[in-house]
Image 1 (cartoon, helix red, strand yellow):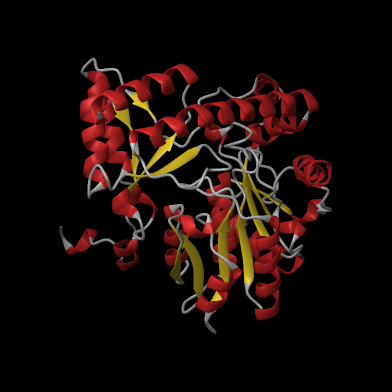
Image 2: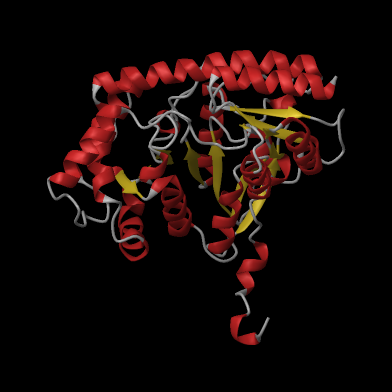
Length: 388
């Protein structure tokens, strides 16, 4: 590579998505005529709900194709704020709601508004890999909090307290979490929020899988800390992945910095998607989305006992999202190699733990139950034959 095209030094810390290699092998297998059961993709298999689609089409036909304000369509900001009141009994002012280009846009705005060179951000391991990259790109230092089944795959207030330093700027928590489906209990979240308020550390809560919670007693971080920065998305529960829309709830002190960043980075969120999202909060749409949540729970209840019976180590039942983080040490020492072998031998595609950190990376696979009940049953049968 010539000096002219030498990548910036910051790129050295940006890791690839290893699941993309799995997906490449899966695509090649499918192209060769093999049947592949896709359990590697963290995307709901349901199409966007029809009322949302109709609202989007209507917006296009009505010429709603121009920029909105950088913080988003006022009517949508009001609808999101109202949703916190109706579903969570939390008072959120519309001015606090920033509509973003997906949850990724919300995470970038939150971290870049807060974090600078020398600042530390505490993150869980395993956890969503882009978060640590966003911290690095902001000039900060990601500090990992190793979690395991003994704490339900979530950090405790005591663990966070032990990891705090004078340089800690924020703690980023996800509940429900990717890849584990783990939920932080209301009591533990309350303790963590109180600790961070006392220490003057910001709480950033990734709640993009809210709405996809099955048994846990969970709550929005805003119920525990009204000054938390809360990230959410229209992708998971609302089933609008390709529309690229999310939101960020921001304390007043950060609203202007976030607005300036949004103006410079994104100009505005996609306009037709914003008009479509207004229909997501209609009662009939929410009823349909809750039915889909129940379908995900049924799929989990099919897949989880089957994986355990095969010998996968899953001591904690995932309570949200649509993932099972399964220990595979009894089958292989390298989850990435094991994932590729399973794909080759069974046609079942999974995600190796390497994408989610280093703490348990080589001993775990993530299974996404984002395919139909019938296809999950087929995957179970194939895995049983191969692992027997």
